Image 1 (tube, one colour):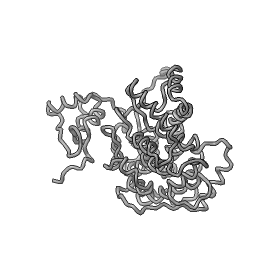
Image 2 (cartoon, one colour):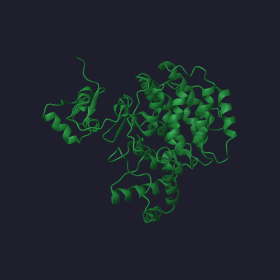
Image 3 (cartoon, helix red, strand yellow):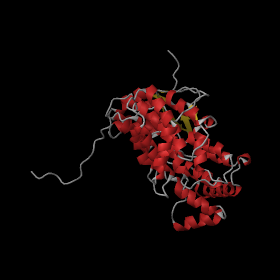
Image 4 (cartoon, helix red, strand yellow):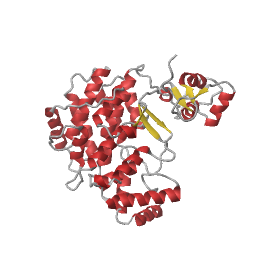
Length: 401
């Protein structure tokens, strides 16, 4: 029997979440013979067979609430464990030094290649730019991304083929198209370079491209976030890839998801000159300091840690006043409130440190998530269709009989 590769195993925290109990109760189940715990080389703590946990979840011994198929989504794409982020078993921080194209292809197919390239049709790119030119002058970059996805779809007559090979081709073409359409005409061809040209200013140091590339990779996926769940629901109806991605785009336009870095950007812009005064003013207002803490990570957000590490590299040319202010705020927040910066704070610091467009974080987020959403759509296409039917509880006026 081959050694387990971890694909059908759950950590203690994941098993507890599935069963609706505390981790201590999971170990109680082990002691009572209801679960078998094992060890896997390189994995901290006990692990459990997913089928065994699923079986127990159906018994009266496990306290749970049956909320439908949403609770039972299985994925081999992303693992969040012990404050680490993994794509298909590879540490996302390690992958962030590669090209966006290479990592995207890996997330979609499991093949980690070096010579991956995506190509966009220049005619379609120009039509996306023409459509964007009709938008209001103060439109955000994410609006251009959404328009590009919709316009591009009309030029892809075979988009209704949702087979894996076709979806990978469509996704690569779309990433290149969106990246190119976001900015002016450019001779660049890589996704990261095209996005950088679209978001940078005349004073942005070229080293920012390294940070931007890492950001696009580190934000590619983050498990079943709200937008990803929307993508999977759309994919379960067998909507084509472009339509599925539009479902995700709708979710990230909310201030609590894709736009969450905006308040952190405003705060850091004010903190650049006097971080202590800005922090004091924020605390006095009673509004939490934006960009700190996370519902999943407990001690650090690995995406933020890596982006902030790159920003501190003097060779990459980030504005030292911004990085210094960010570090002071981080130190104060850690000492006083025992909290840590998240990816929203890191994106805000990146935007301020290179003088990018203020709406750069949400555009980066949207483009990066095209990678993860595509992978989740591909997984969902292999599931039973229309499997999301969550039971509702009617609380309105009862019919009169």
